[in-house]
Length: 625
Image (cartoon, rainbow, N blue to C red; front, side):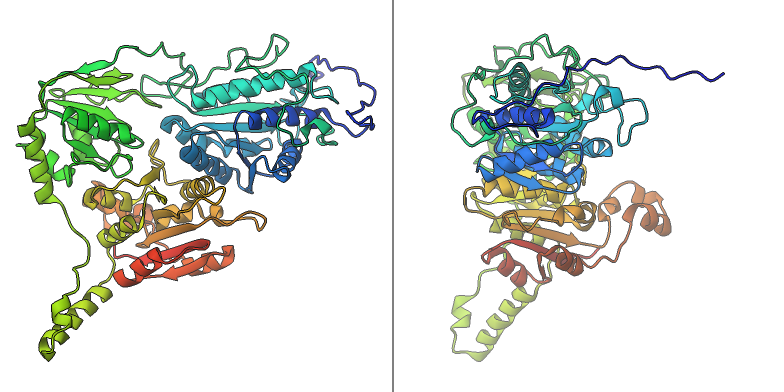
């Protein structure tokens, strides 16, 4: 029996007469979608958002036109990316560098789903981000309308706040109407949630924005550049939307800290403990600095007089207590075997030796709380919001043993200094010998250790260094010494996706306003190919100083060091893991408008890394498998 479709009862405000703006000119072409987009974006800008990343689309055209106006007014830097996944990771890089969320604007449908990888990384790494996704109004959902899916809740497990915003149904000539004020309060709430206000960490926020036709209209006059917000606007602090926003998500909940090994909607965390965890002087202690630990880890190691085991992506790989070749020393029974307590900052991911230590039930592990899942590899790890060091004498015998062993195990990869005396000698054989030695150094082929060392040496505090999740970051972690330089890496989930886009975001944010420095991205060939679409830069946008350094071993050689290499036959290993390719990066660079250099020797590599950088460069370094 055929049945008529069930229909939902929807309520819409009656069409109002054409409104007039503040100048008295008729706004017959005004659109509720445009006025609502203007109210939301303007308030986000007033709250400090300076970067907007936009992927074009039909349903999001009001947001796009408002963003274009804000760019013309000099209030934001606008980044247009045709791929939403690239847009998400570009915003991730901006948030990483600045600590302020960038806003991502996109249309409905699969566009929203493409934001999920960046949202997951931002959630696990604690990076602020605002995801503004246009949608169909409620009456077009679930009825087979084009480009329409269930967007509310799509990103819920990964966001700090999620709201399905009421569909705008009125224009606002003066910028002080109820709808505008509600959206401004929502912007405040979104900014606060993204920054982690009242939560334990920053993270992504998802505002789902349904719009009805007309999807674009005349921009409101109150969007004009001004230092003051529109007349009558609420300029107070973060406030939740009022009760009239009944069809918004009532609890606005999202993921904060998961338990039970899976991701799901979690409860708000309890208030942080105001009393720091006191670290007594007795146990033999090491400080572990994982990804994004920052300088606090070095400061703690210095205060406690404890050895500092700092990953290359920690931002703490410097200082007098830094341990070189820590993997070897952790495996030494006289050092790693005598550890009684480990204090962990950041997210350690790069070595099995650290994971083994933190899984040892005989070791007291104290982990400072961060974003994502709490660290508890041994089942007894204590979580702390803050730590303090008790007064007392430093165990100089313990620290000294580590520092001596560290010094003995350190690797110096710098090329040998020229023999000045021999080069100046009047004895032909001595002079020729010195020249031959110099030529041998210059012609030495680059391997992975030389590559990471050259990039590390070329980078200074005003530069930015981004590591991809490739074999090279593990090589760098194993051999590089200490240096205080800004390092970024997507180690929240340690995926290879979005690496070039992330570096673009870091470069755009760090160089805005003419700031000096070069952003260098070091990654493998497969990570580069995975994000090749991020190479596209619109001609209207400023070209950052960005070097993408590709260590090309023609496949995934990281699998050669894993268990699978001992059990898989060569054919299967190549087919499903190593995945060899024959891509010519020179032609990719040409297609996307990048400068291209191919280097094979240390001398060539040092020259290209230290020469002035005027724009985008792809530097390909062939490596043996």
